[in-house]
Image 1 (spheres, rainbow, N blue to C red):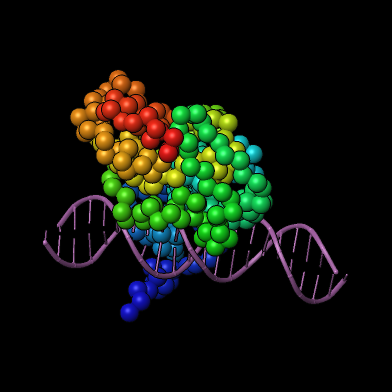
Image 2 (cartoon, rainbow, N blue to C red):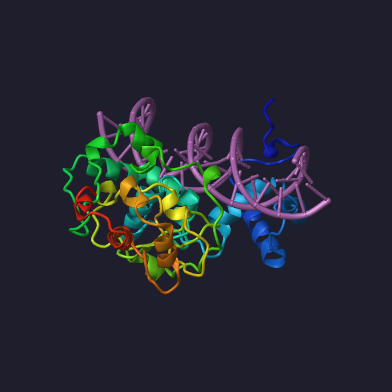
Length: 292
DNA sequence: AACTATATCAACCGCCTTCGA
DNA sequence: ATCGAAGGCGGTTGATATAGT
């Protein structure tokens, strides 16, 4: 048995909002806030369901909503975040102040996806941020149209990115950056969801669009960070790191590196360096480095 | 001018997670 | 531990606008 949509309840209005309804909703929220969306329409005198009210407020009426065309910087940010996060629109929206997940989703499906397809046809050059580590770059040829259609990035099509339900809880979100901070594409902070942490900073310096400059990263890259005062996340399941590489690093070394003030893993380069460093200190063989 | 195809975007739907009883 | 209510999210739809013929 299929649950009836909440708006199907008697008397609930659907469809586009009128200016009068908007005004009622704005006035009510300005006076009373929105502690309970379900009760709000009745209290405000609106013939709408709570969900509809919430959506209208969040996507359209909220004072800090930025309307109008996306700047090229915003589009580039969406590109890069989508590459890393997949279709996690709310997480992407969290990095674009004033933009809503719905808006970003629409923009993606309308023209950004087309642009991505254009990049797909461009030849890919290997990019290696550090000579000592060969980052695995995925050729654009390996990205199927269906993957693009589904909005899944190359990393998420490896089967490593768990669904939302599998993502472990994280520490509270750090403060959001200002729009000027976000507009700088060379320093993109990643938040995986509103509730998750910004515990891993990625410096996407000088990156080309799309997947080619990213190593394969599974979701645990962002979410497996141990809770500690050190806000840096450790890529303990970093896919670019061979198993034998990881297995030779004693946990004590990892624990040591995780202690505050060691400054590990502020970006992808540091992530690679982190493993390199631990591996060497653990007596790893230099030759293995070239394998990754 | 009329019609059709395509693009855009606001809004809805259903599922999942969280939280409190 | 269980259950239901509520909030939140991503996918999808449908109305409208615009471009093309």
